[in-house]
Image (spheres, rainbow, N blue to C red):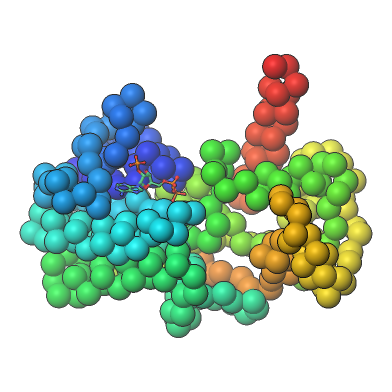
Length: 319
Ligand SMILES: NC(=O)c1ccc[n+]([C@@H]2O[C@H](COP(=O)([O-])OP(=O)(O)OC[C@H]3O[C@@H](n4cnc5c(N)ncnc54)[C@H](OP(=O)(O)O)[C@@H]3O)[C@@H](O)[C@H]2O)c1
């Protein structure tokens, strides 16, 4: 199969490219980086920028059976509209008549901040925040072009994607807090965590790309555990006692408020929300409709993360 990948040098995209190459697909990736930084064994690099009118995106996409659109901006809000909305718009214009199918790496952020309940693909879109709004706008552009018959499209919406190379440090920080005995629960038991291992996101993307039954659909991909189970898995992998201290929610909000004045204070307002959240994102639809094999369970994935933390600690101590 001929495939093209935007974001193929990123945390998720790079794992996708390696897996596609391993499958024997002919892979072309788009990158703004220098040749030495963008090199991925087995993949052809097309140097360019989604936002640069000089980049001939027609040449990048031409002849692809599947285009995986994984480029995105995670933290620089100033660039999000340009990349997610205008960049996607340019890529869509270039792709019409030139590709067989579009697979879009979206986000559960499209459903907005949900604090409880089971979120499925039927949940109404109500994104809040620049990242979430621009990602959802990108999805709407893709659906509109696909609905006009240009090509079939599939949207894949992961929750937080984790893996040893993840750029978001919050899971590593949680592991270190549990390791140092500094972790405490907030509020009543039963909060949930929603994470998905990068290898499972890659399998889901490929399923969406090769399975015609996925065409026109949106799929959530996520794994979840209660916070107590999740923390227990980490503590066991670290060979540390399972934490049991718990503070009331109003006290946590107060500490986060006071800590807000201290640069780098670990308990922020958004972290309090994250570790007292009770929403669950359901992967039921993709598991029932497609033949995806999700290779990494939460226990195995978390053990891998803990091993990464231990390895880095040993490496730092050695230096
Ligand atoms: N990480 C998560 O937890 C998570 C969760 C849900 C959804 N997602 C979505 O998954 C996608 C990938 O996330 P990630 O964590 O892998 O991100 P990442 O590691 O920050 O990688 C971003 C990628 O986007 C490319 N890119 C950015 N601006 C570009 C531009 N103007 N032109 C061309 N390429 C551009 C970069 O390519 P170069 O630097 O090589 O040009 C890089 O490959 C994003 O769309 C994100 O919204 C991520």
